[in-house]
Image 1 (cartoon, rainbow, N blue to C red):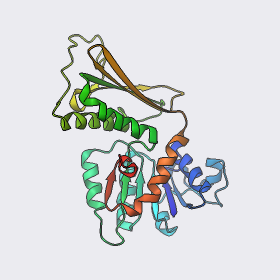
Image 2 (image 1 turned 180 degrees about the vertical axis):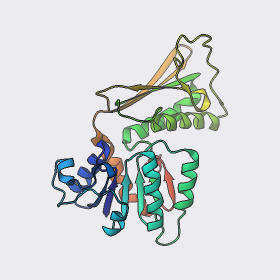
Image 3 (image 1 turned 135 degrees about the vertical axis):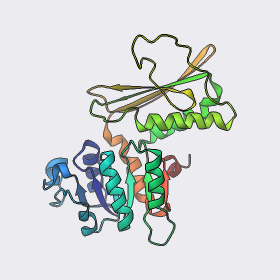
Length: 271
């Protein structure tokens, strides 16, 4: 599989490049990042990349014959890259977060499938297998508790809050309650907040979400459920960006066989 990486100069992009280079069944043929255009990729990722240079132009994907693009970039750049891939017939695996419902509807139209030769797209809020399992476990637990809050913790360079993983987790909790007729959690009883935002943001089903941004963190999340006399905490920690790579490689290998737009890695795992 001939792979291009968009956002190749970022921390996640560099990890994806190293992973693709190390895999005998994958070939890294293009690296995109306007902020590093013209740079020797090997100097960025610390391993031999067969002399590949970073490009700032989307045309580099078609020139290199990329079959799939892995996008870990910024939202606005990802929108442009995915529109280009859909038009050029290139499959896409997307880890960039912050997409709106309108964005996903647009991607669904662009990657419509299942016509022969049409490109496909997989979008996932998190590619760590443990994080995907956390979301599933939270969905299973949701109907059995009287309240839930999400605390997500990321490095201080993360641009969006709450994280895409936290938002999807709240949506899955809401879906779990809706499926059993449980509805939203009871409303928050807090009357006075000494600081705006002290109780976090309120997401689907009334779940409160709290975002922590600190140097030294990578990606962490815990879901805390409460009921009379008990609580349940489900937590996942990614200590290294290598934790996301098994999911990325899985998506690269399966994207050609999944017509249209797939949202969430859980569909690839049978969850």
